[in-house]
Amino acid sequence: MWNAQADSLPVTRAPIESLSTDDSPRISGENEEHVRHLAQCVSPLPPIIVHRATLRVIDGVHRLRAARLNGQTHIDVQYFDGTAKDAFLLAVERNAHHGLPLTRADRNAAALRIIRSHPDWSDRMIASATGLSPKTVGSIRRRSGDAIPQLNARIGRDGRSRPVDNSERRRLAGEYARTHPQATLREIARESGLSLATARDVRERVQKGASPTLGGRPSGGPVHRPAAPAPASRNPDQGGVTAFALAETLLLLKRDPSIRLTEHGRFLLRLLDTHALANRRWEELVDRIPPHCAAKVAAAARECAASWRDAAQQLEERARAVDGRGAVNTIA
Image (cartoon, rainbow, N blue to C red; front, side):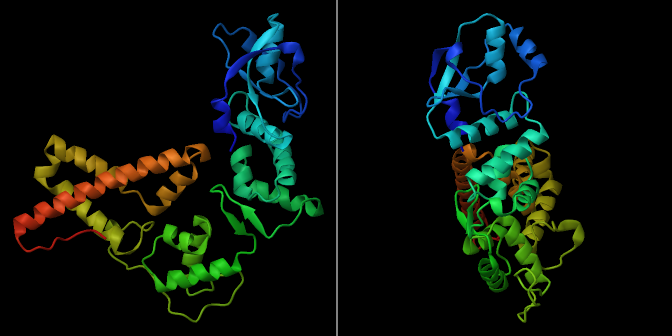
């Protein structure tokens, strides 16, 4: 959202008396003890963020009060150019995740205001800005009643617009899961436009023979369940042959003295262990990456994936040269 852009704004000096502290997301106002603590800091405090159009302080009211307490007449500021709605959103984002955190009441009130100003935002999107859970945001939205426009689609954290009534997308996801039983959750979500969490629910329903849509009748199609290898070596989060083969391969490598008794071998095992995360762990990790870091992390992930692919190709060529059969056992 606006959080990442705010950090790169140029810093300038502004007269303290020209700034306003109105429209703060803090219902009860500032914390006097925190103001006194900041006033006693020896190190320079970070610049405050000010909405240029209204001269309202977006982030840094306590720092402003501390500067006044110390007799300062000017303070370092970063001017934010945006609408009043965007300024309030930035104030919530900044104060919900750093410094003196907003109280639960502050965040609940902020969520309601953002729901009213951005009714097309998903619960998860608003939750990421306010520090609340998506379930709490959804509850606030429901309690707001007719005051909030009921839209047919909402924008998610990935910037994509998805229908609120996603029965058709769930049906498409269910069909894809049935015809592609080894598909990952990300593939199902990409093909249907659903979130990963909804794609998981659809896949579990299909595996049980139930309808992919909420409240639907059991489907008449075949029930596809993951293969059932030995529980000790299968990761239930990954499912299918891939997880079993990966676990077996890692186990064999760890038992091989030429790998586990050498420095390079142990380093390789640590790398493989690190990257052999369950699908659910990957989803949780990706879901918690701040939106402003998403593109950078994606670029880094692609570079890492390319390095692994290059290494795999070189190893396969070596293996073919050794056995002379032109075929190599690989993990799907």
